[in-house]
Length: 169
Image (cartoon, rainbow, N blue to C red; front, side, top):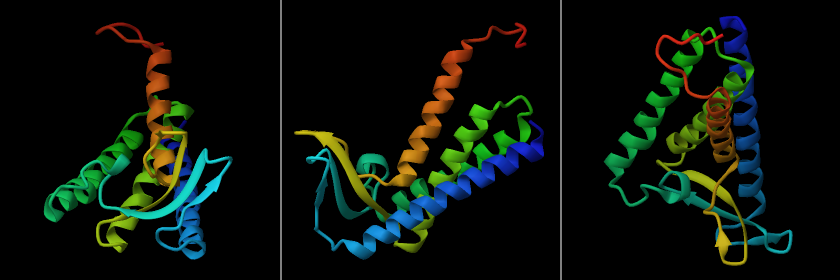
């Protein structure tokens, strides 16, 4: 893939994640009231609107506002910029890595948008599980981020380690 193809693919993919995430958030904000819980699929999927000050699974929610803003706004922005630079400067990236970058960029930017609009909070509404074994509350952007990370890890495992000086053909 050329640089132009990589960037176009990643930006279109990221835009798709942003649109889907923001649309689902808007829909559930509209149809659910705070504190309401909707049980679907015999309780395996719960829809419960909440604003999360932390990150994945409320990690960091107990930090001070200033620290949380530094980490979850500026830190995330730095990671996303780094990911975009990797996308620009790595001519040997395959489709899997480009799609992974699109997933992470889209999910990260959508949650970053929430933090900027909702006083440092992200709107979450999904919870899955069986019985007492449940996830934390998350959103579609989180799915994109986790999918992107999984694709990068899968691709790394599939390729295997390389030794210094070894051919990467």
